[in-house]
Image (cartoon, rainbow, N blue to C red; front, side, top):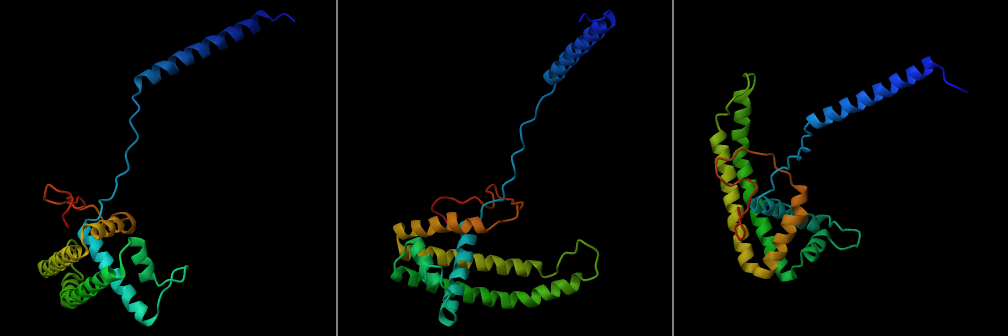
Amino acid sequence: MLESPIRRSQLALTAMALLLLGASHRALIAQVTIAPAATPVQPPKAPLSILYLQFFMYEAHLEHRNETHPIANPSGKPLKEHLRLKIGLSPEEWQSVTASSLRIEAHTRALAAQAKPLADANREACQGRPSPCTPPNLSQINALRKQRMQTVIAEAKSLESSLGQDSTTKLRGYLQTDLATHITLKPAVNSRSQSPGQTVKGAIQ
């Protein structure tokens, strides 16, 4: 069946419109610059000193629970024994780990007892006051935090010295791969050129 002149005219206009639309679309694409996908902001990695602090406190917790209510993993081994085997330390080396952990736990508890009245006074001083409120005992609390981390670093260095290079490498490997995945730090502004999460090979920070 022959198409009418009107039908042919409509088809021609439609084809012309599609061509123009395609040309306009291609021109528009040529002018648009596609921005690269934004890289998600990664939280800073925990420094080795923080990893050691968490490790010492966890091992001290396992030590106490092992004495009162032993915790076993699915294989039936106590968790502290499972952790020792996972890291690859000998029973003698683990005794050094336990001793360091209990010392850090005792030191942390002592500092926490000193910090509690300071923190309570800070809350009372800022209660009902407009934000931001600078706590009056902030410097003292920060000094206690600094003292705690200095003690952790000294204890970790002493432990690594007693373990030797091979066992220290095993322990650090566990801290920086397994344990680090469970610790997230909030980004913080640091006046030093080194970022808070950056660690220097061979040093505990």
